[in-house]
Amino acid sequence: MNQQYPSQLLEKAVSEFAKLPGIGRKTAMRLVLHLLRQETTAVERFGQAIMTLRREVKYCKVCHNLSDTETCRICSHPGRDASTICVVETVRDVMAVEATQQFRGLYHVLGGVISPMDGIGPSDLQIESLVERVRTGNVKEVILALSSTMEGDTTNFFIFRKLAPLDVKMSVIARGISIGDELQYADEVTLGRSILNRTEFTGTI
Image (tube, rainbow, N blue to C red; front, top):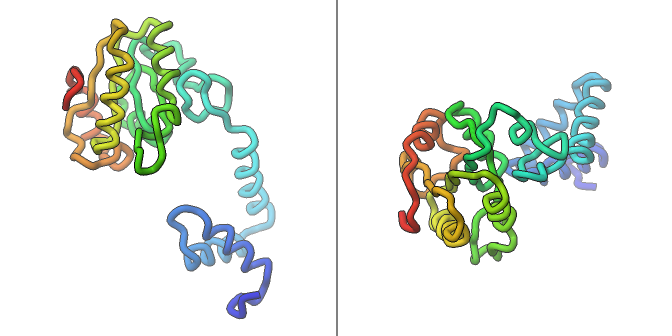
């Protein structure tokens, strides 16, 4: 046991918390000590929530967003515009766009962007399922809302080529989002305006 820890149980808990992204050992120690000061029932609820999340959360069979059911609340909502699909990289991007309250269509979560340097190719993303949605559904517009990075632009162009044979309008969000920015870090007003002021995508930026 590391001599700075009075308890092996404490050390083990700190080590597990420190594995979380953005959490160093000092922050992990503060979190663990905080939990130790809480009532046992509160800590049990915390642990149960994590276990239930891991066991029961699903990916929507339509858009690949996180969901409690086979089809997420957005895809199954009768008030959403099923003719418009907003393509994003991650679940966090769905939440960012939803927070703007400027988009009433559906989403498609790719699960990332094409990045050969990171070993991520088109087959690693949910691109074919997007093509199938457009091919078989009544989709009139696909909005490409990917990060304005080289990887995001590469993915935009790849999707454009895949969807080009299909009769669907393709748009990109306006470049109010600075080059190199990720959607999740854009403020709601800027992101909302970028969606409203989207422009037709013709294969070039």
